[in-house]
Amino acid sequence: MANVLLGKNVTDEMKEKMQADIKALNAKGVEPKLAIVRLGEREDDLAYERGALKRCETIGVLSEVFKFPADMAQADLVNEIKKLNNDNKIHGILIFRPLPEQINEEEIKNIINPDKDVDSMSPVNAAKVFEGDESGIYPCTPEAVIELMDHYGIEIKGKRITLIGRSMVVGKPLAIMLIKRHGTVTVCHTRTVELEKTCREAEILIAAAGKAKMVTKDFVSPGQTVIDVGINMDENWKLCGDVNFDEVEPIVDSITPVPRGLGSVTTSVLVRNVIKSAKKLA
Ligand code: NAD
Image (cartoon, rainbow, N blue to C red; front, top):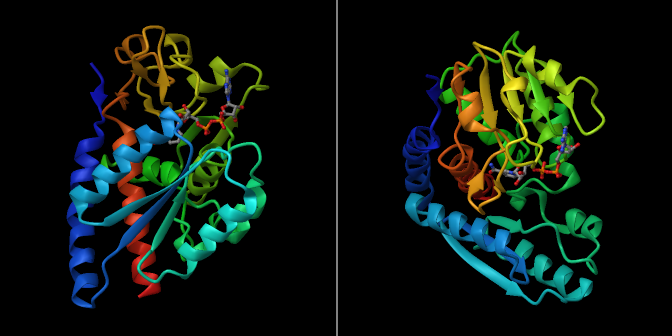
């Protein structure tokens, strides 16, 4: 039986540190606050929003949702973001993506104040990830993977780590962050040949493909750690990861489940980013 790496143990530890930071900020008259910007009513945005609001409340960070119609004009959105940039009671801004078609995301990325960009969409923060400059805000999901590994004492240095996925949200920044920690990283994607073999040869396998249960027993080998970033719906509309847990768990050494795995760590990192921004802006 594999060791099941639950998110809750990680978030409990993070919560204690965050609450101490909030206390110190409150003593200076600062109340960290997250602004969530949502256009329309997409179900996955609403699910993430519920999770983020709940996490903010549990930890003691204020939050407010700024809801706009899905057909909002570019100029109006730019205007709203500028208002949030200039509002000194707001320390973090999370804008749900993908944005509707009529919105030019490139412009939005460049308008958000990098110091309030808690989801790391600004090119300024992306550059800081690539430079290893820790004054930047790193994207929540890759940071959550590292946090989980550190919590469970999973060594990164010198390990063969295979990642499935090369998006700007997960795969690419995570690869850079793992290299910085001295991992030997292989990044796989839709054009990778011999994907299963490459995955089997890793010591640590991280799946961020967004394909329900694609990592089967043929992708893994004994002794591996498997981290499942995927959030998908299975054939019965039940939440599942990229890993076929029932097939993989009996083979590997340790594995994160979905749900109860990385998701809650990601929202905790989001809240921590708000606190980090509040400290920087205070
Ligand atoms: P994306 O669609 O932007 O990128 C997926 C990547 O996986 C691409 O680089 C693609 O080349 C690769 N890929 C897809 N199918 C593949 C296949 N069959 N073989 C090899 N490579 C393949 O997705 P994303 O935004 O990076 O998100 C990935 C997953 O992570 C999704 O399930 C998403 O819901 C989830 N996610 C989870 C969290 C969390 O908190 N746990 C946060 C963000 C995203």
